[in-house]
Image (cartoon, rainbow, N blue to C red; front, side, top):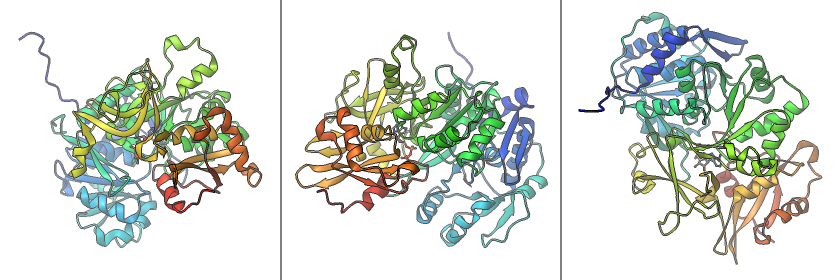
Length: 539
Ligand code: ADP
């Protein structure tokens, strides 16, 4: 037969072995309570082998789900490799989930063992009666085993010390599960997404490609995005594939800590949701740091307001917009400018950078209208964004909501978007967040991105409130900058928007908040805002 090539399984084990063979001396640094922990890929490899042996001793079998409840650290990275490479499935738990949801996802995924950061024990302890599937808790920390009612409980470092550093990795089917992650349910329980080795491998390769993140051996990668949020956007695996230095912030993600870490570790690529960069900005403006090594700040998870790009540009820092979903492993599109745009005026360039971007190599997109017709790529027509590709989920884990999530082999994202002639998508809204006013749609994303351009505004979110005549009207919830508290008025906001939007888009009311409620992954929590303003009376 002509053209046959090897049937070679694409697995996370390939990434691990490659890191050991080629990049044994490269560093992995973690900020800790006491200072800094730093070791090399060779050390990572040895400890991953020990951990794989320990998992076997704990009775973890191929296909079993093993949970992590942890910040971004080198230990978490060890679990990221030991569990899937030994054939089990690593399930990263969102440490900010409410108790009932946490108990639900641990039970639904039937987690056998939970790896828990010592500092997070108090969040898990009250749930112990609700976790019948868990056979062992492994505490990750530096000191002796703390007092805890969790049973049976083991110390991570003891497990590793007692285990052999030699482990023969099994040959795995590339289509077998390597990891899973639950995405917050808008209604009902969170939905489980299961990743395959093949999907993760291809996703890693994709992140290293030049028109995506171009992650390479010379990079120093600091994911601010938590390791429990959609695979940490795939960065730890991609970094290992090319031997990039990795930096983890532990639980220290406040602006002063981040600024120091970005500077001292000479980070070249970092990533996180816009709220991270919104809160870091004033700190950097007041406390200059040498961040000249940073070549890309990847911001995704919710829309980046145009004003944030320009503010970071002024500091010499380049934000690149990204869009994705837990269901997509997660990266879907990236907002680099193309060669023919480099001569454009700055405002035209900004308009394109503020779109979410065009599809990465493993992703295909289309937008579909109410009648199921694909809308033209004209940058105007809106439709539900649908995606397919080798890193897109094929269904939710044991969940009857899976069927409704697909349309003829395409995954329905639940986002409303336009696609322009270059293939750049622009997210108008999540379907459930659109303001439906008199049969027309108002994009809450457009409004809030514009409001955040007002110099007195720190954060803004727009939600729909019920209206007798128009069904729904927009309510703007605004957090002023500290120095503008008390002086910023609703009129100022509406006047600022007036030249930018049609009259009927303008919010009917503006309310001022001290702080924006945030979801477990740091996005503006519109569910909470809607609940809070359920009975809001528009004048
Ligand atoms: P959650 O639903 O818990 O927020 P995800 O992080 O998987 O979980 O969220 C994916 C969703 O986040 C997308 O469907 C989209 O609505 C939103 N999103 C992600 N990136 C962007 C972006 N750059 N701009 C606007 N919305 C985004």
